Length: 497
Image 1: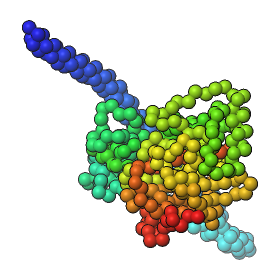
Image 2: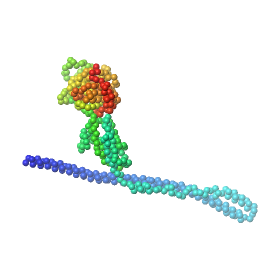
Image 3: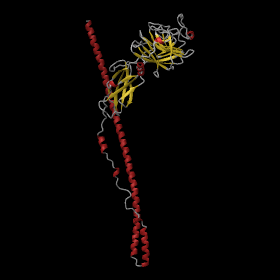
Image 4: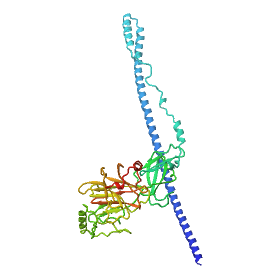
């Protein structure tokens, strides 16, 4: 009985699932019918609009040509009528002279004939008829304003709907991912002169392969691409992969998207572990600000081996100031207490136990003290970065006088380089290399060469200042090439004094 019920439950579940799928498909079909109606109306309206526009252009061209014919006719009419008027007047004058000459020839008086003949001769010499050009000033031929529409008529008869552009194919072998940029290259099976532009879409994902129905990140759109390649810059690789697809568009319609491709975007991403942070550090996402009122007075017994530092007096002042602020309950991280005393430290939430990683830190150069580096998980809650064998760092000191030093195991080396606005941290765990760079110029500031016996974790310290961390960055190419070039000249821990 129980097995039969279980079997029936499975059948019921399968049937319910199938019913839900059919119901969803019915909704999809209904939506497709609505979309078909709307899209058909839209393209018909677009077609009518195009023909109206075409008719308007033809009508305007016709009006312009008719105007040109009228202007040409008026100009030639004026020329011919002027010439006709001149000729008519000349003819009239000539006929009068001719009549006078005939009358003179009929005269019998010699004296009057001689004078009349002389007058007629003079008049004929000056007559307009003998100064006229008997060539028309304007032609009556208007054939130069004829229009031959045979070629255009053939083009119009060949007019048809624009073909849907072919589907591009992304060439994975030619795509490149480096320096937090992605270069995408695609091709078409056949050239298409009708293509106006391409649309590229990309989406961050943590899944390899084809896109899933449900993803945590939306598609981002890049429009108006004229070439069959595009480079995305200024990216933050906070997911393992990025998925890309592209489609071609002509003036009227867009083709289908290409098959999506997924490219690996390896980069080191982490967050700050607020549970490890000193109570005087205010943590907001990847930004940290020193807060003199954030701590709580603790009765801490000074260890006799702890060296005195200029921080002691300000730290005691900060602890006294904390009495005036509300108590802030710490969110203790399982397995360790938050940093305390004058450590002012916070760790990342992700350990490094293999490979090459890179991140950057932008800090306030007016901070009284700042440090960035890596530490073992065993770093003591009272330890300051660089003052034990469990941490390596670059330390900025603005107390009394400014200095920039590399620190490890309570040894320090003063660095002879300008203080940058941000520092890039590179670690090659397998080779035991920890290097610090000017994040803007990628100039090497200092390198530690060691052998990490345990996983390490990014570590930060600030006193009377602030900083922010930039993660999701790939190891810059210039850093990797510089590491290969300087592999034999890196500073060692033993050289720190």
